[in-house]
Image (tube, rainbow, N blue to C red; front, side):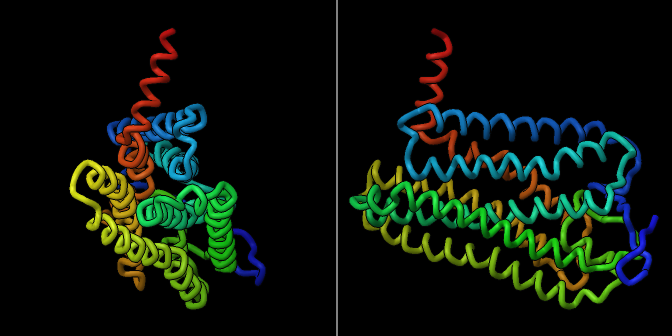
Length: 314
């Protein structure tokens, strides 16, 4: 259960992931629930990607960003849910050191990439509402691509920082990860090294990569709400508010659960049932709900679906 470390110290090379509960019995009901959610997540996001890529009316900046959100959500969900399904239906809870670090790398990549992408989508709505006449010029294709590349780059930088930080830790035992996937906080809890530098780096990155985009989103929506109130009451104001409300709902779900998981007593890294339930919200539920909340309820998407359905019947 150990391997030689760089300093000839014993280090864990296999972790045991607890899952949602401490029960070692197969939990078929939860397995079926999460399998259904995962299949809906993949199907819903694939549908959005298909519609955006095939319908000319959806070739706009907003749907370009939505397509990237769907890609992130599918990968993000696939990082944790399949392993959770295995834990729920079998007694296989072990994961290699390399496998755990790999899962951590991908998770930290996409969790931060989505943070920045949600901020970019808020900026897109800000430009569309506050500068409608110049929207097409301001949100040109080259800018869209640069913004998306920046989001993915921020995710990459975050994953590299967090992975290197965890890799510098020595794990002497115990090796039980009290969570349903490998993440920074439960791994710090298992470290037998001095974690003060790693914890400081982690909190700084959370502040920059997590709270930074959130503050930007709040500031952007303050300007958006101010602009909406100046629109004459009627269908135009309702449509504008509806579009923004969808995005803000996604932000509230994602950031609300994420902040609770990472900020909640970080000094002890208490991974109790409440923390795990909240983690399920942003790792499992939010990727499933995003297509429904932000896309499938839009008039343009509904029309694209009807067009595709009619085309399929011919």
